[in-house]
Length: 151
Image (cartoon, rainbow, N blue to C red; front, side):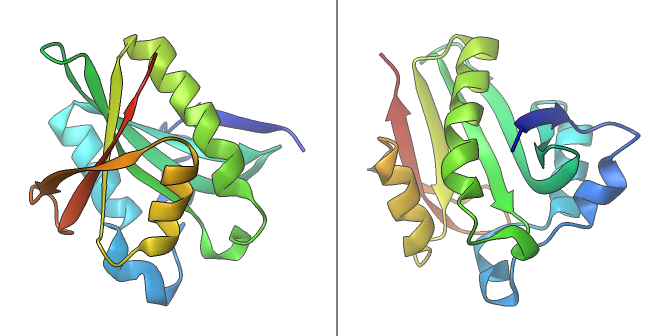
């Protein structure tokens, strides 16, 4: 198993757009098609594919840096429904955190999630994220904000 992250390009964007969560999870996250358009046209987010060897298993988008509080958003993170249950989320999240830290030298990483997505909340909490009391109403999906303080 060789896990790695690749930026979304003209060569792989269609495969990324074709990934999806299970039907029960669609209320929790924007589609990858929407996310790819957002990162392309807002020019603030970086879209990446999550790979096991040459198999695309997930997608993430991060960016929207703030110099004011040295922070970045992990705006999307999903594992395709076909690959869920194999531990990929737990394996890719630290790789994403390291990549974000390296690219932005940030002190905080924010994310938002649907308040009913308790499984994702527990995952993020296991890596040190905590609910900070803020609410994110900026996306298509209403969310509560979690943050990770980086030492």
